[in-house]
Image (tube, rainbow, N blue to C red):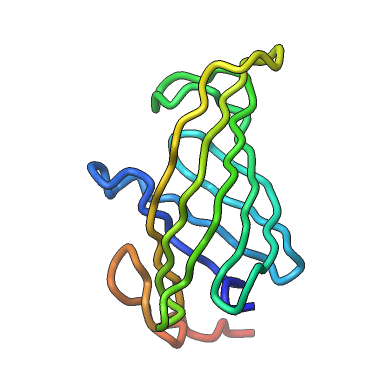
Length: 138
């Protein structure tokens, strides 16, 4: 599916230094890392040639950078990939529950993402297609 690969979420438009990176595995597994909430795991499924559903969870229920609060934050998202295959728009909801499973909030969520490739690194604009490190000597 066109979604399989590495993507950079623009999760904090006001703080671009807080980019999250996600892997949509061809198997349907999903992993994400971001500097605020840590790691997320989930799954995705294609719903069309350029569309998919995504479900993933974080275990930090507090959105503050310097505070960890145990809980489950569940994202339920629909994805639309553009014609280039290198950008997407995602929209859905976030369900926040405390460590005891009591719902704290449900909020709407919408973010764009950009595909990361060897020719285009969303953070810097590009990365070399060929490693620049020399071959080690025996």
